[in-house]
Every structure is written in C-alpha cells, then in structure tokens.
Length: 503
Image 1: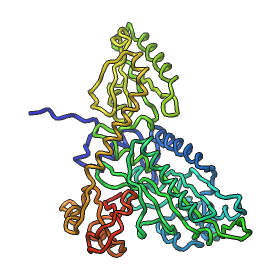
Image 2: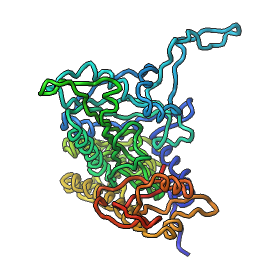
Image 3: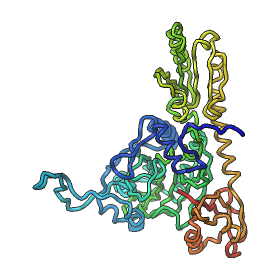
Image 4: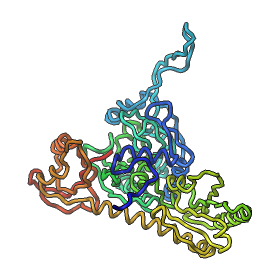
C-alpha cells in the first residue's frame, strides 16, 4: 500500500475547503479575527502582501494620470440621499454613527451620549463625498480629465464573513475620474480594468476573464460595470475588482459641471473603480495547497528564507557568517522593481522549515557545515513538493535566482490558467446547463464555469439564480459578437455569458 502523504496543515482542500482556507490564513499568520464580529486584524505577513499589491497598483495608476487624495471616513446622510439608486444598493450594509461621545450611567457603565442631529455613515464607498468635492474643484474643460484615487478602509456590514474574501471592514482603493465626453469616460473605465487584469497576472500570477456585468448585476447608479472574474480551486468565481462607467448620474445629482470649449456649462462624465484586500483572498484560493500558503515571488513580502543548520557547533559561527554574506549579496540584486528580500531564521524551532512552507515563502535555503565546505546552497521551491530539494553552487544560485523566481511565477500562472481551461464548459441546452449546476444532497457545489448563450432577459436570469444559485458573472469581452441561440429559450443571443457560483 502506498504511503499517504503527510501535509503541513490539519485539513486538506478535498476534506473541507472552507476549513482549509481558514487554516491557511491562520498558519501563514496572515490575519486573525478581531473583537468586532466580521472584522479582522491583518498581521505583518498579510499586510506585507497588501503593501506590495498596493505599490504595484499605485505605480500603474499614476502612469494613467491619477493623483492620490484622502477623503473623510464619515459621510453626511444627506449626501447619500442625493442619489436614490446608489443609496438603495448600500442602505442595508451601512454602519451609522448616531452619537458623538460616551458617558457613564448611574451604574458606572459607559453608554452613548450626545445624540447627533443628523447621523453619519461610515463610508461604504465614497462616490458622494468625492463627487461633492469635484463639484467645487472642477470648473473648465481645461481641468479634465480629473483623476483621483484614495487608499482607505470601508465598512459594510456582512452577514457571512471569511477573512479577506468577505469582511465587514476591509482595505481598498477607490478611483474616481471626470471627463468631458461619454466616450472618454467609458474608455478610461475600460483602461483601468485592463490595469487590474494586468497586475493580477503580472504580479500575482492570477489569470482572469474580463467582461461587462449584466444590467441586474451592475453597480448601483452605473451605466456599465466592467469586471474581471477569477476561478478558485473550489471552482467558484471570484469578482476580483470592478470598474464603472457612471455616465452623468452622479454629476447631475451633485452638480459637477464644467465650461466647455464652446463656453457652455455641461455636466461631466464620471467613472469609479476599485480593488481591495480581497486580492489576498484570491491569492490564497488560487495558488495555495495542502501544505499552506503559496505565494508568487513578485508579491511575496520576502523572497527567500535562509535556515542555518547549526548541529556542528565548531562551525556554527562560520555558517552564520556565510548566511549573512549570502543575504547581503542577494539583497544587492533587484527583482521586479525591488531589492530581493532575504530572511535568516536563527530560531531554534524544530519546525522552522515547515513554518516557512506554511507561510508560502518562495525559496528556502538550508545551509550547514556541508554547504559551507562546498560553497553551495540546499534549495527548495514553494511551487514544488516540500521535500523536493536541490544542491546548487552558491555563485550559480546568485546568478540564476531571478530566473528561478520568474520560472516560479510562470509555473503558478500556467497552473492557474489550466484550472480555468479544464473547468470551463461551453453549454448549449437548458437540460445540460441544469445538470451541470445541479444541487446534490450536500448542497450546491461549484462544478466550474459555463459559457452559455442567453437572450438578455433579466427575468430569466433571476429564475436561473433562484433555481440553482448561479449568477451571470460577466459577458466576456472575448465572446463579444459571437452570436447564437439562447440555451433556455432558443431566441437570438448576442454572445455567451459566463455563469458560475460565486463568493
């Protein structure tokens, strides 16, 4: 009988995917639950990932003419009431501040006091408060396009939460722009979606399917919502980010106008777009395995851990010097826009190697007296089996380390692309569609993605969602213009829609 592989986590993906996901977050020391239900404390390793994501996005935003600003956390209620459709979309998720201070009651217990005349919303999003500022900042066509982004936190009460994928408070960026014409605004919102998909692929080795949301799934108040959908190992869709063409809806409700070249007062055309710490959830769900987190090297907080093996006490000091010199040598190299980050783990823990496997660090180097004498390193890659280790000449390793890291990125990307390819099915009949997404005794599992012709009818879309818990994730750009017949009615269809179960 073949010996069963022992994993570094207490649960596997096959046994219980949800428990596995939580175990990855815990053992990789990414985050932990906070005292407030649905919120999380992001630990240094998790925040290090977010900071690398943030840095790459910020650089690419600025290449598109975006400037960073910051807007208040509290939003006056009357601002939200100016845009009815928008308010309806966020009303049930909003946290409200109703009092200005605390005081002690007769029993010495702290209770809210100083009731506000008008309550404030803790921002669920900032279209209204940013739009109000735009109405004062923009005057002429010469001010356009006007492109602002803020890095901030938001609060949306959630019923069911999971760290990074869905929490009541999360970190994100929200970009907001104003343009002179509808064409410019719509084009810009598509450009920002392209920035999102490029960073996900180039930095995080996550492929995606970009497209436009159906009318029922678009952002409240938007003319068009563009999205990019990724596939997790659970075979569910994850909406990784969105970009919205808002038309003039917010401009008219907030009176954001400009004087045109012809001297006429006109309303601007606006966009908004955002990604969040959900990106880290996508990383976990796309790449990780039953030994823990797997990090593509370009997004990892540290690239390499050196583990000194000090059993030979006589050579321990020399081994440590060897490790320090190697760290210095590697740190002088640049990889993907930053210095190669190296950690030397000098702890006396017997589980050092497995601890770093669970944290997902790309490369592990074990160095002892043997490596010292041979002027070599003993290397393991996180994209391969934990016990798959090779000895390399030190100088050769230093020379090739950037190629090794790039090879890891490409391997992880290819694996994620294969996941989508192998689990996306073209379905042309209602019977086959319902069979594909059928519920069993355990509930509604996710079999993957279905690309299926749909006639555009919202009632039909709602019926499918009610019957199967399946939604249209997007109308993929790659399917545009490929006409056919609706699988459910036989009526003409402009293109296939991407159907899936989602988070």
